[in-house]
Amino acid sequence: VWVRVEHVVRFGRVCDQVVQLTFGGGGGLAFCGGFAVSVAARFDVFPIAVSNRLRRFRAAHMCDERLARRRGVGRAEQHGADVDAVASAARRFPVPLAAFTDLIEGAEMDVRGTRYETFADLERYCRCVAGSIGRLALGVFDCSDRARGTELADDLGVALQIGNVLRDLGEDVANGRSYLPDEDVARFGGDIELTVAFEAQRGLEWLERSLALVTLLDRRSRATVLAMAGTYRVLLERL
Image: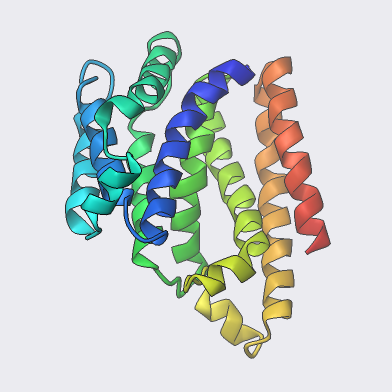
């Protein structure tokens, strides 16, 4: 199971690198462009919408691509192994490759520094950057009810991403990003500690509901999900 999940996660890591390089002063766009070329070359596996979204991401955001080339992050061949790993998994398992468009949309939200007025807005972001990973990972798990499992895997991603948002709050603020919903901050009179405690409780509630997923999974897949969920339960309870 872990080997199968790694095939999917490697693609997600590339999208995360796009964001980190862009925030780091350039390079994300060329990196993304090279990766888009690699994805487009596998048109037999990846939906055209995925490579098109990557290309639009590159065109929509400016960066110093000369710096990127000096860093060596713009070469398409650099990403071939990651793309081939995902393509290999998709040939053998029902991996919903269209979910990568959501993952890329989430990366765009990060680069734009999107603010979230309501929890519904934040929920959309969480579904893009983490729910998508849940849906993709489910594709390589044995699941007795994929329709229901997809909904629960998406919800689990929301729960885990709430944990990430709260854990990384200080770092994100230092980088000029804010993920706490404005309506919740206002509800507690601008008290960030109370807002964090409220969001942590919300994350725990999402986590508990989404763990109905484990009843649909085989033993090995169930262990994988429970290990991840356990780590985030501890995090959210501490917050």
